[in-house]
Length: 638
Image 1 (cartoon, rainbow, N blue to C red):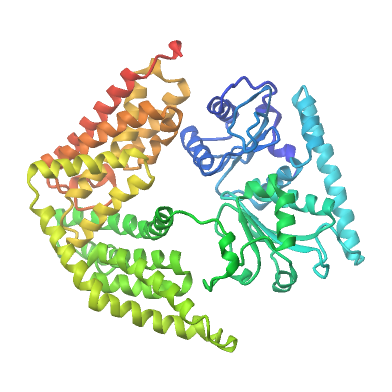
Image 2: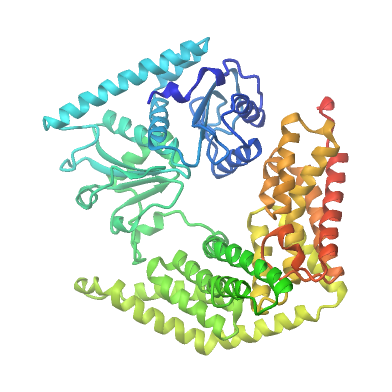
């Protein structure tokens, strides 16, 4: 497939009018929408900004490559655009972007499409090629330039394969027997562009430096050019230029540079030189420690705890949503057909205490532990979580079990570090499982279960007996937290707290769930209302996107408001926090109990005061919409 099969002329913008990053993204998305290449502008825009939040796609050198892989895309497309003046795009080198490639890939993108997008990314490493692109005047010239360049690349590739078939040494990919040999892994979250640009940048720079290199890519098609154990053993150093998790245990004992994928593109020479000189911390997959570890960058204690906690919560959420929705449906069936109904009993079994919900705390604890101590910590963490469930230590006990089991395994690694090398094989299959489980289990049984069981019982009793005033304050706080970052740490903390109360009370106390669900439904509903009734404050595309937020808000998908918050954070976040807090407070004032952890309006009938719950959501949404609509300036005044 040719690059120009994806970079269709109809979508090209030869004179981009945007002066800001947001305007550039809007203009590029508009071209996609006009050509019918996307089916949901709001979702696509949300995914573009989600990728931008991870790191700017302004890769430097005057190039920006915003991209997303989502079901909102009908057909894989690349929108080419160029700006004569340049746009401040938060580029990694601080320079304005003048050449833009917006990559839209469907969720089920064929391998051919992904390989073509990878080929495009590789071409953009060539500064002469970018200079030629800037001189083009028409879409036909752009298409011809890409076709010519790709033909040259394909011819060079065939020559390279022919040389390899004749056993001619390939100095670009590398000779692992050389004294000047390094290996690298590149990976980015979507695996479409930066992964392959970093690969090409490292290979090109290594060739200039006379260094042999092998690069493994972890792209959308999975790992390619996978490094062999012998290549890793022979390499002087390892470069991991990645923005997502890659397999690291194989690099145990090697000097490893762990950097963002953007450094692989922009700082390839620095990375290669450091890897050759061994100027990198020694990686220890079993946490053995090393004098060289002082060179490693240390993250703050708070960010480390948050990362470990989020690893547990993210793995727990599918059980919460899946089990919670089935439980909610079972409650509806119970109201109509009674508890002897076969379907009610089936859904209760699958979703309830012996099904999905039975795994919530063990999964939470296990993956917190795994984030800390790697795979040996998973089993003791999960067992500790299960002990917390059985002893009534509940959600808090599970949290404690996860962190404790993770650090127990780290302790064991250090304790067993002095054992003879011949016993290394016994550690993961015998020593860590047995001693990890024994120590973690003993701590849970004699210390954590009694302590957190008492705390959990006290907390549930306090919440069950809160006076109206205190309950309303708690509802205000939890509801407001759902809007502070719309799916971020504050949102997840409020939701996790409510899940903890819900599961610890035997799924009977859904007061806190009512508060967070109402608070989480308000932002997208408020956006939808504001864009509907204050049309002169929103563009036509924003109004269309606002319509989808009716569905997202009713479904308790807070993230639907993220694109609007990204474009106008002060007004959107402030108005949404106020409305969400009011909605959460009203659920407690009216003593609403919602025994379902997810589902929005679709589980509202389960609330003890269903109409009041909907009224609380409506009041919060209207207040937020009014604040936003009145505060936001008309388009003409911008």
